[in-house]
Image (cartoon, rainbow, N blue to C red; front, side, top):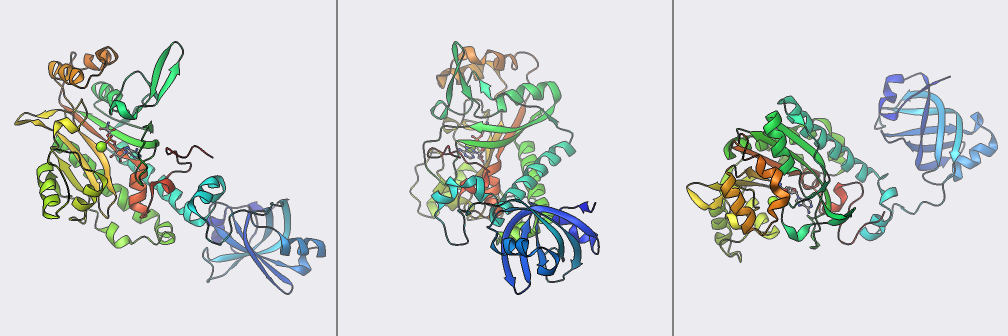
Length: 431
Ligand code: 4AD
Ligand code: MG
């Protein structure tokens, strides 16, 4: 039996007889030769069928085989310097596993809605393939970064009894005789974990009932959230900066082909090395005023404001000290300026907006209680969280990186919907 190989390692088997399992991506024929482009998820290879090697009937079938038909081909790998993988397969035998129906996605232009309705098939295209490969690399790099620094991975629950990021975007669900919410962030649980393990992170899906239809918002998105005990805002920013540098450089190193498929300007990504600029909210507001943007002091930044601010920089910019009133209840306020939060948002360059939100947490029991009341949150549900301020409360900080925003930025995508295999937005729950 010939060895079964994947296309990405085919060049290691030149001159040998191998089996390749895959799907028909494209085909042409000329005289006695049929050229089948076969993809197997790791790459694409040309398989050449000579009519003399197979039955007349099978050769006819090859020529008329619809796109995405499933095939098992056996043959000898021959060097071909012009081919992407450096070789082609000269077919000895070919088994048709399944003859596909007429494939709905053709090389002609399709509308976004059509493609999104066929997302389960669209994922097979080279562009979507490249995006998912980069997404995987980004997630791996984040995890490697924290693992390398000795962080412990702690999983946060998905069903929660309480709010983390504001009551307006909660997804509520029945939970036996009571109600539960789908988690908006694992942060509060990471705070508990940081007091147990020192430095921790979670990685999982988070949910927000975002009613706005923007190119930056999903209702289900993935976040990586580190949290550290005995950590202040500036150390937290060092960590965020180090992580982004590592992630971008890892993608540049390991996903060259995919970035090329996406026609990403990698020169801009090569500049993403520490240190990143750090400015305060007030300095950011100054930038908006200088650009004559319509902006009211004290407000949170909208997507358009973030673009104007980040356009001033080639690297991601970290904006700190927002007005406490526009930020979440758990943020520690600046002792020197109590109306300001010790928080940081990292804004990606090229108009991609906020990719990271985080900061130092309120560690004083009484102040935290007051903040919970001010935000009209039910203190009952936070009883366990308040315990953390009763038993060895220490300064601590962390942040959340939105995976999809980061994928959009690194891949250079117009819209967040292509960054996740099966996007969920206000208008999309299918497929
Ligand atoms: O700024 P956010 O709301 O911060 C938190 O949830 C903190 N509890 C995190 C922490 O400190 N542990 O969200 C963090 C990041 C944003 O910067 C953004 O990248 C992403 O999550 N994000 C979204 N991504 C896609 N769709 C949405 N609707 C998003 N909302 C936030
Ligand atoms: Mg935020």
